[in-house]
Length: 490
Image 1 (cartoon, rainbow, N blue to C red):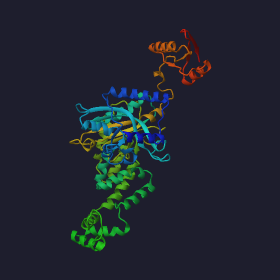
Image 2 (image 1 turned 180 degrees about the vertical axis):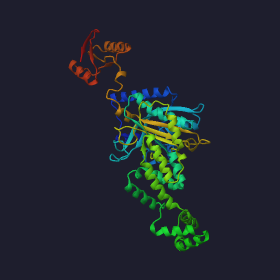
Image 3 (image 1 turned 90 degrees about the horizontal axis):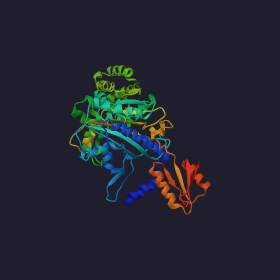
Image 4 (image 1 turned 90 degrees about the vertical axis):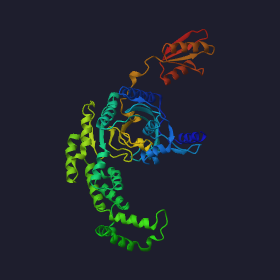
């Protein structure tokens, strides 16, 4: 493990993984948050599980489709394995189920808590949490594996919102999207899989209006999803021609240009690939139509009762079946019996994060005092992960995770004070010949439940009083060789 120690020490020395140096007061606050949330989830059937801090890098890449690759702390261990500090918990929990280390009848409910490590960009990067560089976060979450449908979705969404309310957080809201529904809409427009992934990944940019749409169009042009003016007429001709005529035309255009091509593809493969792109009827028009549709879609968010009628009208204008919204209707109906304690629900089908991972509902828990992701928490449905991690089939599953550090920041200043040890703290100061008596006194105090700290450096009365104030200790007891005790409040 020498190499591991070198990597971790190097990161710490260079402050790459900022934060976290927790003060005693902040750490007690985080522990209180953890204990209360764990108790909340335990009462709802979620059992606590612990996962390794260090895992195979491949585990996280298979889960994320590579989206996490640039944000993980990865290195090669002494055995030659490529490993990473965990950037999240879900993949480890699901791998435990696949490997049968986590056993039990389905559905299984698990909860977890601990540090995760992700590089979050530069200090001025909007995706960053404000700390700059790499970061260590305290994360607490839950996974519900083996349960599909709106009822399971509603349980996880409700518990995620209720847990914060039970903790004392006020002002948060639940923003709900649905990757499955949006994928069905884009499929209905006729998009290819490649184009659909591109459009979904452009939702945030499309929210910025006409300039965003122009930027997305430019990227689509670079990727060949939209033809340049020079290629547009060739594309139109190729679609109208008989296959053999189109082949002759393309061969004439390419001529000898592909004879000397080197690489993995043969000239014939390049020829066929180019011809296929030309003959994909309606692709540019479909991409353009889908971009316009998506720009309108991401602009619709708010209270479900207000947004749903607008979504149905939007689908109608683009020739899509309003029945595509049925999963959203089912989810909202299943969520209705839960008391969310006044937490607002925002329906936003433009929420499309984790598109390589999530398959259904996705959600974020937002707060006005938190201005950037990862918000206070979030999650969603990932029905393909069990199979991706080695399971024999897809298994319905979903979960969420809280950003514990951020939750701490939005709680009242006095949060958890009522759970602090109310006993008066004591500093026991031995005289030079009274060390044994001082130790015995400190032990008696501790046995009675009174926190007692032994002064070890031979301080004077004034220096001991100063130390006590610095430590937040209320009483100093100086012990003589005869066992006599002089007590003083500070």
